[in-house]
Length: 293
Ligand code: SF4
Ligand code: SF4
Ligand code: SF4
Image: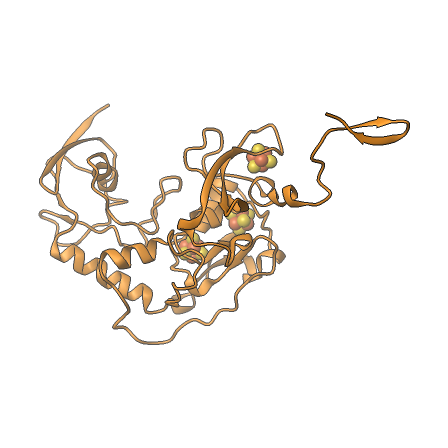
């Protein structure tokens, strides 16, 4: 494979032709912040948080969509890059409810993580704010688009991972929304409730209903298991709090399915706490079921 040599933060790196700056940086352990980028989805270059400085380029290109070139010199945390990232985050939080204290995504929210990293506490930008009704019309997913940063990960996941194409961008400017056709609640849409959109959402805009108010993300013990429903054999992590399952989380390294699951694997686990569940084998004796060893 043909490779190109470039320098990132003073370190030489050889990356395959066609790699992006972000991928080359990852090869040497340099973590470039990203909100819309997801390795399982097509690149979009929308959030601009991954901007970097490239010597000789007067603009700050987005690292997730800029291919490496021979002799490129890149700085990922220069003063102008840090200033640009802070402004981007300030613009995002200007219209974002800062209710992290009670948000179910806290601990796994990329927006909060990067605000901490770049010391963004609130926003100097004032103006209109969204007041969308929360969509909890279905048994599985809570959709709070007040927390949406329009990264488009849910739109791409629904199309590229699930093939359902239930989501797209609607409206323009301030009113732009990542939502269903006709902007109807999930339950009235073509959603098949696979939850892929929830798995890729970097903020608290899409969360698992079963986990609401149950635990902070860092309190959840993850237990890897195999789905019992069909022969595909998908793997995922059970989210366990105090010995009780409260939900299912995608496991990136699941060998068969990656982060993809269907509605049964992701949301139909609650049968295990059904009081009518069989917990011992039964055999029929004289017309009656009796417990077997
Ligand atoms: S709902 Fe989440 S994944 Fe979808 S665009 Fe908004 S922030 Fe991104
Ligand atoms: S749950 Fe699945 S089908 Fe429904 S919107 Fe999300 S990704 Fe699309
Ligand atoms: S998550 Fe769905 S596809 Fe995967 S093993 Fe379970 S039932 Fe089968």
